[in-house]
Length: 106
Image 1 (cartoon, rainbow, N blue to C red):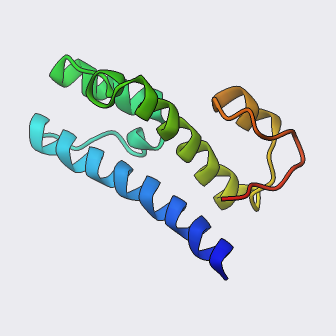
Image 2 (tube, helix red, strand yellow):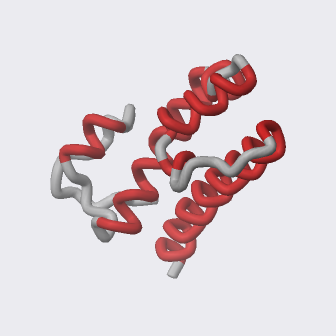
Image 3 (tube, rainbow, N blue to C red):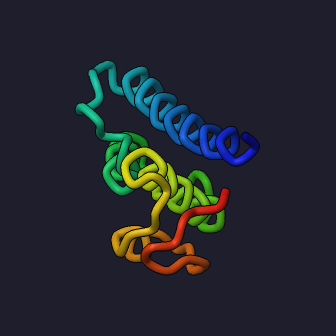
């Protein structure tokens, strides 16, 4: 049960960040954000940087951005791969604790 709650917390936190980014973007630009733009960190960061002159790395710092990349990729695995690490996770995440086929432990 604890593991399930922690996994849900990762998913909820990432989705909250996505939604918050979307809302801030729409308030700042007075236009609707492109659909699912903030589901990808690189695309969301670029939109934010284009509008404000600051990327996510500028705002959060490199260390926090690295953690956010891990959380985004973990959310993806939990939502779509039942938490099983695939090669995309290893390429897109700075998380070096796992190998392909292992199950995430949150």
